[in-house]
Structure formats: C-alpha cells, structure tokens
Length: 121
Image (cartoon, rainbow, N blue to C red; front, side):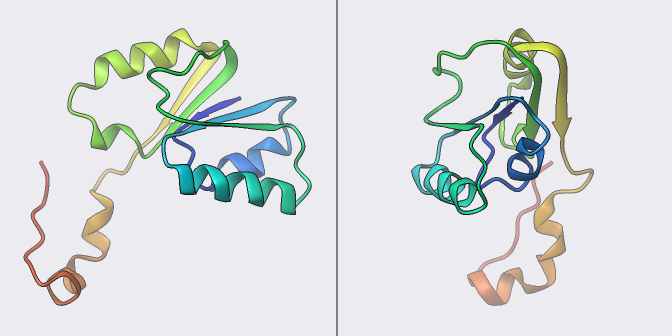
C-alpha cells in the first residue's frame, strides 16, 4: 500500500499492520521524521518513508494507493488522480471532507488568528 502525503501516519501506521509492504511519500520533513519514529516506536518494520514530493518520486506500482485529505489543496486534480491511478495495481482510495475541515474551528478562528476566516469554494 502506498500513502501519498501520509503525514505522521494517522492512517498508514494502523494500515501497515495488515500490509505486506507499506510506503509513504511525505513532503514535510518533520512529518516524515515523526512517521518513521512512530513506526519504530510501535515495532512496524514493513514501512518505507520517502521524504519528498510524490510528483517527483520514483515509485513502483502498489496494490492500493491512498490519498487522504490532499486533493482539497490542489486546483487541477485530474493530473494528480491520473498519477495516483498509474501507481495503483488494484485500487485508488481518496478520502476528502464534504465540508472544509476549517469549518469546525470557524467559531474560534477570528480570536485565534486575529483575522476573518475566508471559506474556500
């Protein structure tokens, strides 16, 4: 299983327990480090962490490709979805919110950030 922009492992760490081989491509150096540390801490040995942009990573095909909460940040999603599909042997799983995640914190936004929350459409 390949997780694109898997962060610190919210999905990948538990999923790695039931995968033969788990790979995460994570652009954030800090998140990739936390993911690797988390995997070592709980004894997950089948996880490979690639720190960098997945658009430029040289990746093999994986049975399943996961993209969780990534596409809402991208204007032109079709090329990304096509690349996800090109790396998937069986399935592509895309998780997104029906509402922007920031709406949960909207009542507190002005106080915390000192500016009005602008909802993206």
